[in-house]
Length: 121
Image (cartoon, rainbow, N blue to C red):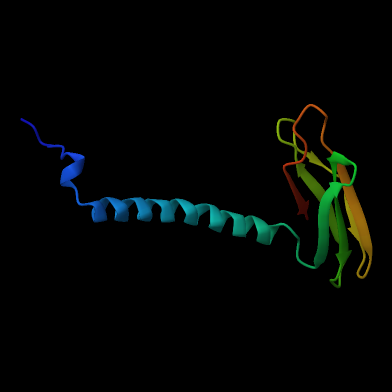
């Protein structure tokens, strides 16, 4: 007994197919946007204002330059995602209120360089 009868593509209205494709694409795009937003919000710990980047002449060295805008001491460090090489963390830096400091780290030369830079609390 046959329970499923496949319909030839010409039998399904184009509007139905188009709607399914658009709905699927919209759902697929919605997930990364939510994830990216969550990652961005977690990138800088509360009370710190930070600037991150790669060294001007070395794509394997990254930094986080932060200022403590809070009322208590804050500790942070830079975290580098290094592609094919293991991820690395920079030195832990403790800042009193109103002070600035920098944490740096270096990916090994075996990988593809820095893929992502974040500040960890």
